[in-house]
Length: 528
Image 1 (cartoon, rainbow, N blue to C red):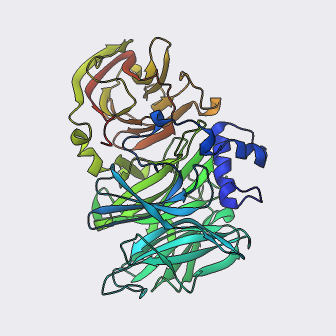
Image 2 (image 1 turned 30 degrees about the vertical axis):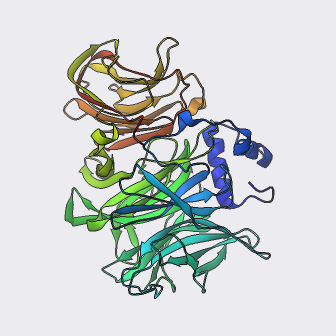
Image 3 (image 1 turned 180 degrees about the vertical axis):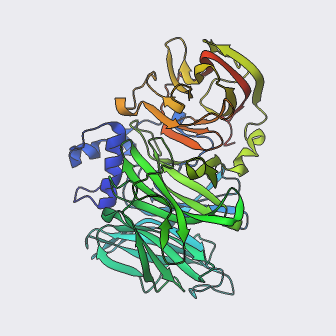
């Protein structure tokens, strides 16, 4: 982290850490720096490394970048400091996977540029497969991979949009000689997300005018020359900077004839990292929000899911991946991880068309293999105002698992699970459903290590039962916790840091609850 003036992007990252850690908004730069120590001064904390979520091996990561899928391989680029596990020297790290769980770590794909007269940090962006070679970057009849990203120029105090191209399947990139392709001489103008708009036969870019709470759209025929199309915003939540936009089409209720467009925007909110979305129509030039300007639709009700962008798959299938912003506890030798990839859908609800998210089908269908067959299930277990441990001696103690349950909550006050627990000392994280408040919740109040301030210890999401039942999926992975309610109608994501003694799992109920179906997969060895 530099000792010179902090860039806007870095300031956003630091502010996020400050909010997550519960520090005062007026904390000084030196104090903020002290929250992110060099990896060389910290002991290893492998107990917090996830087994089925992506992390770099030994360095820092934040936003996912440049997601594309080709020949059965998912490519993930990510904001990376190649030299340490703190923010700095922004470059694009690179990893690939065939199953979204096991990742091949590759050399840095696009490195920070340092010259005597300038530095270009490689900030967030996207990558496309230029199938028609519209850019003319391709060689030998093969389509190039073109990366579109923000170049942050601290000496010039501005950000501009750059492109680079690859003819070896995204392993190495060459900067375009005409860079930057868009430069409006502004200090906060970033995070281009680009896709091919078939109806208009051109590339569309969504990019953030950060402080204005606007998303600007550009169009291009060749990825080199861009024409401004329109601006969207301000709208929805405008309490902090807008970043990392992504615009995508999604069928409503699975009907391709009724397709809406979803615009994602990241912004720091009352709980810290947050994302909102807008639903509407896109005519190739302008995005039209179908909801009121004052309505805020939240992607995730937790306090760490941020900067998510999609893999754009066939038939407008969108697979979302987000950065889980690190919490208060230092980890080493890596820092930062990605969420579980999430299948997106739009569904009609009583409140209107809403975004649903489910853990990726590609992973759900391979849980038996990932757990090496270590699965336990039960049906119709009645729990009355007590704690139960039906899995005792059936599953190994640990904090990397995947749990799915359907709970009949009629006549019940609260029901759910004590996870990452130490029953002898009454330490636990509670995940459950509050019938009286009709809310899904995660409660970290009783954790041994107090890694959240008081405002963040209980996270909730309004969720109505269906026929008196709620479905809960809990994806616990050593330090990350993702909770999906009613097939992804609501999601709560947070970072947790259990002590080595906090590794038990039990059920609880206040009143009578029937756990209709319950399955748990032990994923402690999923990475093997």
